[in-house]
Image (cartoon, rainbow, N blue to C red; front, top):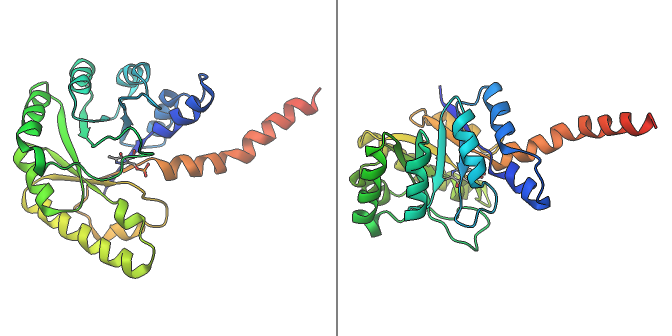
Length: 239
Ligand code: PXP
């Protein structure tokens, strides 16, 4: 049985669109846990475009399952992580101009650097996951750096424009999963997974956890919309 960890960044994105206090990603995390999610993920970006330092602190105090802090492997974030103590760190590449994390981490190019970061984080009792493309060279590099987990980037599969492209890309993910299994790494997967394209992953039981954000937030806006409109109508009709 695989686990679901919910990425709550987009709740904060909506809050930041207005610069107000709602919706609060901390409350969303609690609701996700009440619904059965086995982990909460937030990405503290260097530009704080959605999740901010206050959110991270409160999430650390309130998340009862497992707090996974996604971050770039830069000194500022390493220090915040060591101070905050999430259960897990996921190292991701980060570009200011991107809308969301684009590719996987190029671990191969910086093995020594990431080995150093991994060692510091693990010494603090925090697990380390590397977000990598489904590429055996990157998976082996993550293993070499001391990763506990690899999160396989499913973006290329979820963005496939045809069935044959999706088949091809799913096969690449399957091969990456096999490589991670051979290295005894714990395996997660995520990016762009939704209520339809995730179904195929039933054939990959070696993936222990799925990190999903956008499709859940997108669905919740629509699923909850009618109820929210009805409530406001009830208030104004009483005037
Ligand atoms: N995993 C990582 C490393 C991510 O950066 C993201 C996006 O924030 C996700 C998973 C979740 O992707 P999505 O929001 O498309 O479900």
